[in-house]
Image (tube, rainbow, N blue to C red; front, top):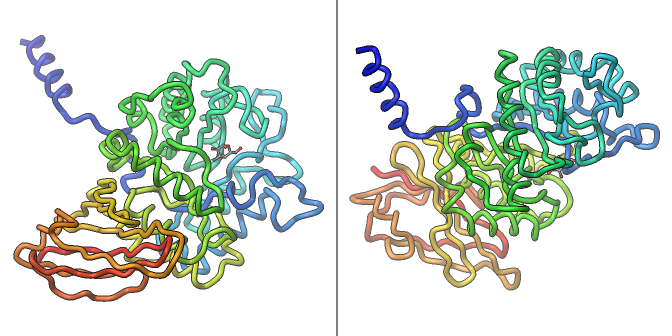
Length: 409
Ligand code: GLA
């Protein structure tokens, strides 16, 4: 009797759909700010106090996030990347923050961030050293997880540099996941496991999504249009593998938003924002919120785009059509709705037009009998009630994106 109950429970477990890391976190993609792309490993606080990696940088960012609408828009995590620790562990083998740049320590910083109603992210590495040569966590996973939990850290970005044997990447990432879990504190786990494994072989994504809340697949984003397009191209080329892995609790991470910096035109910034929403990507901005221009701020705080990104269905979008210079991507949304992004990849000439109908976009059939179409980018516009036989013409700037939603009636 007892054995058969166990068999039945076992079968139930086996037949339940394989799901993401079950720590109750990241049910929608993580939103926040991460220092890396904009501030990198600037540790020269004597020469450049405003832009070096020190506790004030994170406190000031937190202040702005609360005072200027970022928190209200959903950006919640203030994340430290590489170059925060001291080069030496303490006498008990614990990581410690660089005493000159973080004189109050990470615990105090976490308290400050929490007092603002925000959450703190930190960075460590699965191998012997971080990518910038600071102490790695190999051999210290339990101690480091415990230290982060004691400090009140809410997210760990775990990098994959300096792993002596790449075949142990998976084991390392899984052990850190377990160590974090054992602390009893809720800590979002952001991995780079697949990125480092792709350098040797195609990763098996099932263990990855059971271990991590999001995972980087591809190289670092730069403040540059070709970097954004290379991430999009790589994602489209691997969408058969990647798209089914995403869902509440686990997301593909195409890296930071570089909107508000120096390298992207406004059309290109709109493309990054639209496509990161379509890809159900974590929205981790890396920019200087203390000096961002109003146009980039408005784009990053756009409620309609954020609500596509955060849609509760949690399905990642995909490239559905390539025609002439256009790429059409779609993302199924809750309530049988659809988000559609039409990107113009041509980098010469002016705005180009494309007709959307049930031939160019098979999902247009959700407009049966009728649907409501709302354009969100390049600017908000009600496109009225459409039917299955209607067609709409959209105009897209070079390297820009037109984003709209389709709501069946
Ligand atoms: C790697 C990661 C980046 C950043 C740097 C820090 O390159 O992919 O996102 O964390 O390391 O050194």
